[in-house]
Amino acid sequence: MKENMGSIDKSIRVLLALAFAVLYFTNTVTGTLGLVLLVIAGIFLLTSLFGTCPLYIPFGISTCKKKYQAK
Image (cartoon, rainbow, N blue to C red; front, side, top):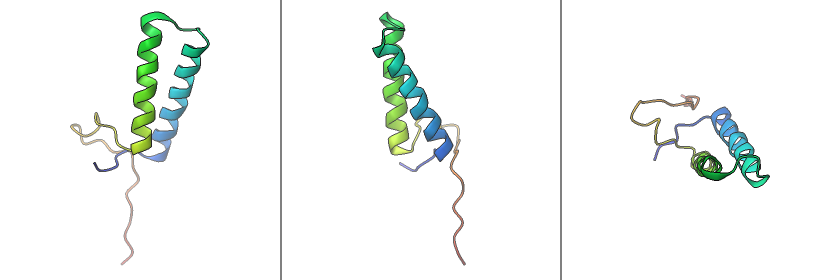
C-alpha cells in the first residue's frame, strides 16, 4: 500500500497510543472502554508503523508532503 501519513500524523498517533495504553495499564480506564482504547492504541501503532491509514484511502486523504524529484 502507498504511504499516506506524514511524520506529524504518525507522531500524534504514537503519542495517543501511549496515552491510551498508560490509561489502561494504570487502571484509570477499565472495563469495555479500557479495552476499546487498548484496541485503538494498537491500531494507531500499526498504522504509524506502516505509514498507511486505511480510512484515508477511500477519501483520498494524504498527510504526506509531496516529494519533489530533481530534474
